[in-house]
Every structure is written in structure tokens, then in C-alpha cells.
Amino acid sequence: MGILGRARRLALIARPRIDAVLSSYGLDAGEADVLFTLLRSGPPYRLRPTELFQSMLVSSGGMTHRLNKLTQAGLIARQPAEGDGRSLLVELTDEGKQKAEAAFRADMAVEAEFLEGLSEAEQTQLGDLLRRLTASLELKSD
Image (cartoon, rainbow, N blue to C red; front, side):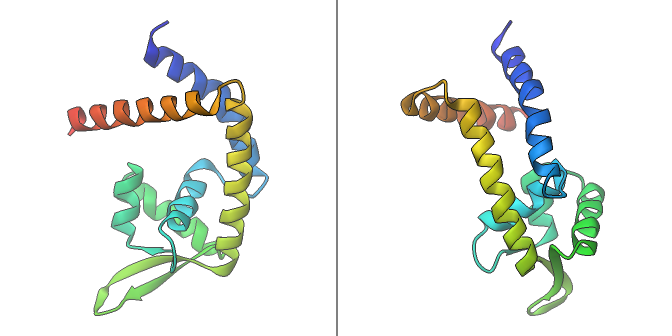
């Protein structure tokens, strides 16, 4: 099995466990991705919808669907952008921030379990190699 085959196998093994953790917070992977991206953006936890869908490699229609569900759940709010009444900003609500933080901690705990067979140095090396490979493949797909 080649490197990408092993990566695909790893994802197939990990995905059900991660999905179960996210589901325990009432989220699917796409919704969690939106919340985690807003959380990582730092205070005030706000981005333009285009920034979200470009960073997550999802269509604008797919992003709209996710944003609608998260808005209905009270986890995000859409606010007019200052100085541009036509643009909207998406931001975490207090409830959304709390849920994102809790779900992220649980997600990271599962990741730590998955990686416990590797030393800290090996985890760092693997992360670095995967980042380089991802960047290289993204450049080739542009």
C-alpha cells in the first residue's frame, strides 16, 4: 500500500470515531469545521463567508447550507460588515464559542489517542511532512 493509500485508510479508520464525538455535540464534520475555523480566527471570532468557504474548500452553496443550520441552532450570527452594508460577517455567538471550544477539546483528545503510538518528535515530523505534501498538492491543483 502506498503513502496515499495509507492516508486514506487512516481517514477511514478515524472518521467514524471523530464523527461520533462531534455528533455528541450536535454537530457534523462540516458544521464543526465552520465553528473551529471561526474559533481559530481569534477574537472577535468573525470572518466573511467567502473567507470561510475558500479556506475550507467547499462551494458557496455548501457553505450557505452550513451557515443556515448553524444560525438556526443559535451558534453563529450574521452581521452587516462595517462600512459595507452589502457584505455580511459570520461570527460565533457566546453559545457557539462555548460549543466550539468543548467540541474542539474533545476532537483533540481523540486525535491524541490516535497518535499516542508516536513520540512527540515523530508527531511533529509527521505533521510537518503532511503539511508539505498538502501544500505541494494544492499548488499542483491550482
